[in-house]
Image (cartoon, rainbow over all chains, first blue to last red; front, side, top):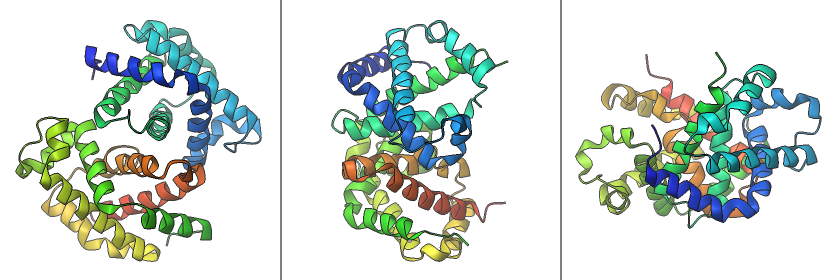
Length: 143
Length: 150
């Protein structure tokens, strides 16, 4: 389900609005994922405190959103833009790619909460397609 | 038998007491049809689902949103035995409607859209812990709906 020009425009427009709060939203999304999908905690067990208020969770959420911001800028070539991150996830972190969808779900949820008026069903559709394509690019190096 | 903590029970009851069923049902269901357009295959008799505007203003969509919420309310009032409560609904979805059970998946589709709409309505009150409780509730609902498929 590749990104149309309309999808790319919608994602860029929403990101322009969201960018200022991206770090906060990232922490929120990651925190929510760890609470609602406890099986994902296994990847972060070395952190100790995995509550949404934990400093490590918030910081890592910000890192993730920073990478997503880069993906938005490189939306015309996600595979290229995310190549290094794909290698990281494939060979070092060994995150089961099924989890990308789960985090994506929580990012969508947080976007809907922070920008209820902007996150119309059509924008939601474009963002989901974008995140799906990001997940695909992140899975690229796995095998 | 699913075990509900006091917090979970209270959180779920609280959500349902706060949301407007008509608004939420319609918003969630139409969002599902828009974001996952292949789900429209089950609603051929609903008339115009051609674009987002048509879907959100379609009266059959609104009506069906209410049906879904009514179904969820049954689960709410029978939280300790959703499986039995949903036996007939499960048979209906598998044998008569022949809905692909993947559609009920909490990670996707209509119940995910419901979570998003509820979160939008409740704002900050939809804390991560409340989200966890709500998603557990929906997961039980989903499992019960899938129960009679074979």
